[in-house]
Image (cartoon, rainbow, N blue to C red):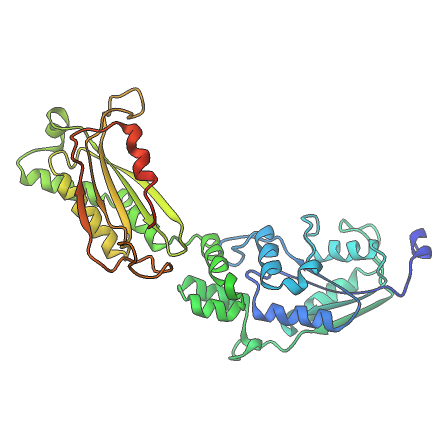
Length: 352
């Protein structure tokens, strides 16, 4: 027996859980309810395992969302990156003076944890530290049945499946995240390496050479080659695409179109419009600049500017409707050239 055991209150009790919760679901909420119902102190621990397939959320993101979604249990969530195994968790609780402990988990996880916790109770010399609970109980938060339509059938894996399928409504139902469903859904998809359609559409420019191919075809139709256009024609083109995401975020992406559209700025504009429209992105602004590729000032030279404003008209739609259902107006700069410094006017354009 360790000396500190002689001076501890052996009646101090704690209930606790330890799980991946990636993402937290309504099933995990049942675990939290069970912990609280047992009376006394209770603590919530989560694992630090992270990977794209089954554990898309990192440790701090998980704990943050648990606190946001379940504020009534926020004070009981323990955030400590040192507690990455069940053995360390038990040692941590023992060092806090607890001598009676109850571990809570779903029926599918309970027996595995029961064996590990029991086997190392009172065993010294282990890397996870030492613990010796006088009373160890194990409680199920409820029966788990993956084929059940109710809470007992909900799992983090099913929530991830909903995220992969793009089913936000199903994901919200599985997680019970309420107002935090969309941010949690986005975090899970990002952690799984899923690119949103608006990013994929613009990546097509580089990945498939979409615009370059169409531009080359346009030049061929005009009886020119890209090489000859570059040598004798206007400066190459930089496209700046500014658009609003469903969550209200304004995103700006620049794409170098090179010399493919030397004599066909309208073609570049139309190709970009068609690409964005096919992807369902209606609320955007396209800004086309010519730049001096030989400039030593990182393209801060005079620019010929042309842009299409697809931002919604004032008063059209609700504030949450980022899709512009109305017609757009093509606008052209009255001046042939403008200084690059004036591009701030474009970046600072108003509501999208």
